[in-house]
Every structure is written in C-alpha cells, then in structure tokens.
Image (cartoon, rainbow, N blue to C red; front, top):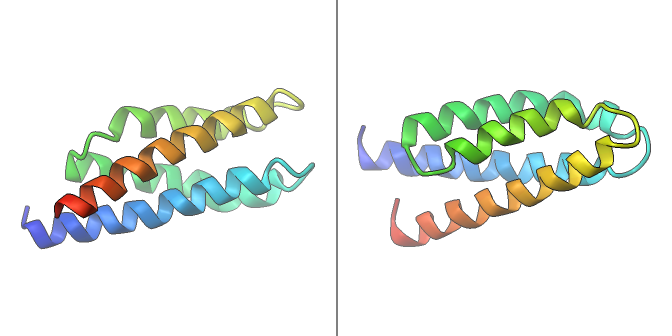
Length: 104
C-alpha cells in the first residue's frame, strides 16, 4: 500500500476513534448510550478494518473496543465498559497521533 494511502487511513482512523470516545463519553449520561451507540458500533468495525489495512499496532485494542461497545448495553455495569472503552480509545488516539508525527 502506498504511504499516502496509509497516512489517509490513519487519519480517518484517528478521527473515528475520537468520535467513538465522544460516543462513550456521552454514553455516561443515563440513556444517551442508546442514541450514541448508533455511531459507536459501526465505527468500531470501521476502525478494525483500518487497523488491519494499515497494520499500525491498534488491531488488538480495536477488537477489545468492539467487545466493550456491545458490553456497554448491560444495565448499570455498562458504565464500567464505557469507561474502559474511553481508555482504550484514548490509548489508540495517542498511538495514532504519535504515528502521524512520525510521518505514517
């Protein structure tokens, strides 16, 4: 894959990771996760595709984030999984931002 394509995919993954974190954050408000999951769940799968295509080291954390997105539907305990999802998204955001500063 061309370096420009990888950079673009990493940027798109970074932006979608931010949107996922915002969705989880909004989901900490009671009943809002039922709304925000409409973009969180599709984006975690899109991020998995980006992570696999770019081999940028975020694949495992992205798979864990997919599990967190679904576990977030559990009443009361879902808050814990949303917080874990926020942490995982933050770790991925940092990794992707470091990669952008290195030029990939």
